[in-house]
Image 1: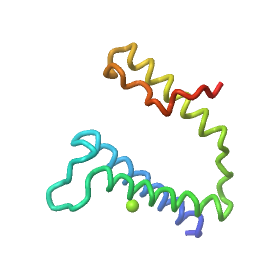
Image 2: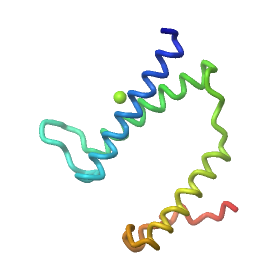
Image 3: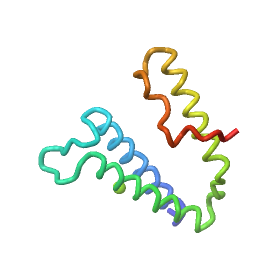
Image 4: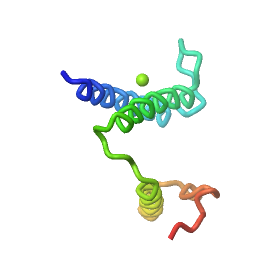
Length: 108
Ligand SMILES: [Mg+2]
């Protein structure tokens, strides 16, 4: 296995760990502390997102992945907000949950 392949497996593992922590936070709440743990679900999710950021940065710095550009991030945020509005229209998102105040910036 090459170094890049090894890093890609770590990336996959960290993605799975983020998915698990996000699921637990959604199911039991961000402030819940799982019995036997000392950190909240929010802290544990942030820990896993930190791990994911670290391995992502290694892959970007070492070159096997092209850099993420800032415009792509903003475009994705905009798309997510559009789907949140659609979810509200479908009745699957609670009222007044579509956009936080900081998200009201016009990015068009
Ligand atoms: Mg981890």
